[in-house]
Length: 246
Image (tube, rainbow, N blue to C red; front, side, top):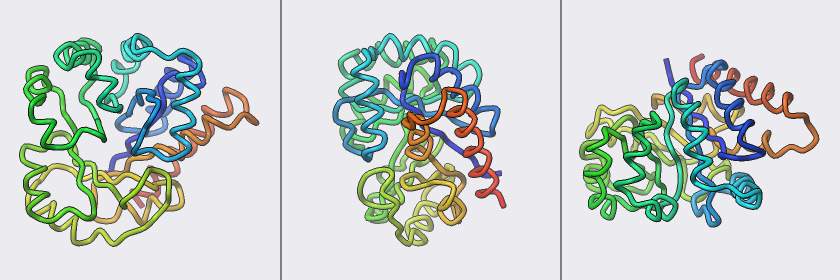
C-alpha cells in the first residue's frame, strides 16, 4: 500500500490544534507526519505554508513548543521534524539530534541543507539512529542522483517540479524515477503540488505522496471552526489515501 505523509505547521493555530490534528490525521490513514518548524523565510514553501509559518511565529512559537508537542505526538505516529537549517543549527546539531531521539522523532527533513554540507553533520544523525531525508529534483542527472542517494534512509523525497510547494505544476518524472530505482531500493515519496485532485496521477511509479499546502489551507480557513478544520483535514487524508491506492 502506498504511503501518505502529511505536513502541518507546529503551533498554528495553536499547540492544542497541532496535537489534535496530528492524532486525527493518524486515524484518517496518514502514515508519517512532518511537524513543520516555523521559520521566517521558508524558501522551499509556497505562500500557504509561509503564511502559517509567520502566524505561528507572531503568536510566539519557540523551539520548546516543538519539543512539547513532539512528546505527545511521536508516541502515536511516525514523526519527522521538517524545518530550515538555521532553526536546528542554533540549537546545536549534536544537541538537537539527542533531543529528537529523546522525544521519539525518527528523522529530519531540511530542504535548505545541500547534500555536500550535510555530510559534516551526518554522524550526529547516525549516532541517534535518525534519518536525514535526501531530496532528488527532476533536473538531477543520474550521476548526481547516485551521489545524493548513497545510503539513503527511510524514504527519498522526490520534488515534483522545480519551484516551491503548492504551485501545482506538472513534469514528466518517468526518467528520474527510473534513474532512482536503478541506484536505490529506498522508497520514493513525491512532494510539491500534491492534493486530492493530483494525488492519483502523481503517485504513479512511486511509493507514496507528501502533502502539505492542502492541509495547511484548511488550517488557515478562518470561516470554519476548530472541529471542522480537524474533520476536513481527516476527510482530505482519507480521500488522498484512497486515491493513491486505487
